[in-house]
Length: 147
Image 1 (cartoon, rainbow, N blue to C red):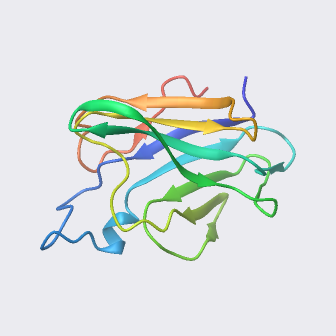
Image 2 (tube, rainbow, N blue to C red):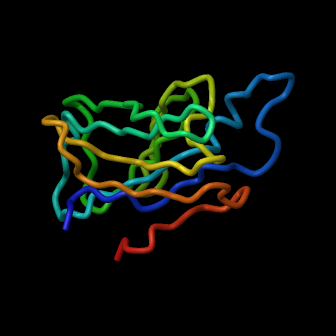
């Protein structure tokens, strides 16, 4: 069992993705992935990074690091971190800490599906979860084996 588990994602937010070929930040922030600290003590995320698959059309070409956490990021016991695609100021909402990738374009692939991978400072996989192509628009995807 891993202490840090990917639990939910919203890779295909409800509504139109772009306006005049531009993705507004408010829409980018509706695309997110979550992971939870399953320990009963705080978990320092030093060296933890978030990755996803890269594609050329529908062909997988590799992986890309989306975020790497530094020393000051601590996820409290039982808390969830929701990582939004767009820009914003980190904040807490109940036991959910919201953080931002500061991207200007969507990162989660809907046409080919995608894989979320958490890695430690040695680049070893902590956890990984995937979703199939064409996730339903506006549906939060729940990890089946998160229990």
